[in-house]
Image 1 (cartoon, helix red, strand yellow):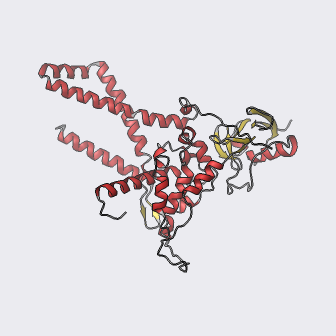
Image 2 (spheres, each protein chain N blue to C red):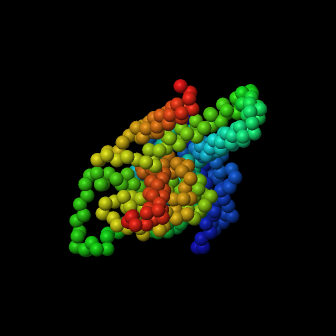
Length: 247
Length: 130
């Protein structure tokens, strides 16, 4: 009996020779415990050394190997061959330009991530010597879920708004801003609101919810965005109806 | 080596056909139109009422016609879908944290259905249905 094989149809694009991407088919041995990343590594090692793709940890932590598998954004290291039919189509993450093969250009996301200031901003009057900022377990729980984001960008590939309006800050960046806004040690909310409460911030989101459905770490960015919308609306009412109330 | 990134265009009119989850989203959004349509029927009813008894009875007859009943059944189905699809995502937008744990999503969704039933009963009571 011949060994079971699966067919990987991989989108290839060589910027030096191709005017547009094309699919290339590779027969790969099937193993119960293999993920799509193992299949790609098999291709790279045994069939075609020119295939380019990003990966690092092989354990759903680094967030490098996000790609479209049968049309769905997934981490290739978390997508088991056993969960797919024998024909598997692998494409680079949607909504990002293709640099080469399965490697995308992620500059837009990196720039947006920096814009939302995803780091603790202490209060101005807080002395630098106040190194220890204690937090209760309940205060930690307020934002813990959003710290699990690994910047894999699957949510951007799933978000139709980002595909249609590339200026949209997008799920992960806003969820991370929300993470710091909810941190009891942080005093930078006003600075971040300038960015995330704008039109190209949360208001470009129409709550499709796809980002949360594909998130491999269950961060629930869709929830974060809706919470930012509510908080921003409350801000607006306070500012316009109750200007004497401090935010 | 020069860079030449390839940009894949997204269809502005057919993007939602790509995934069932996008279709569900479009259903949630589009079904709101049925609530608008029902509001227009109510406005029409008030207009007929202002035009006198005969006009209003004609309006009531139109409501009771097979077409009128079919319209209401379709609008009701769409309104229920619209309502349920929004209620079911409320735990994402309004998580409730008590101490170190979050109230389960089922409780938040259930509270919405509960409030819906209570308000509906109050409206029916005011309308003299009981």
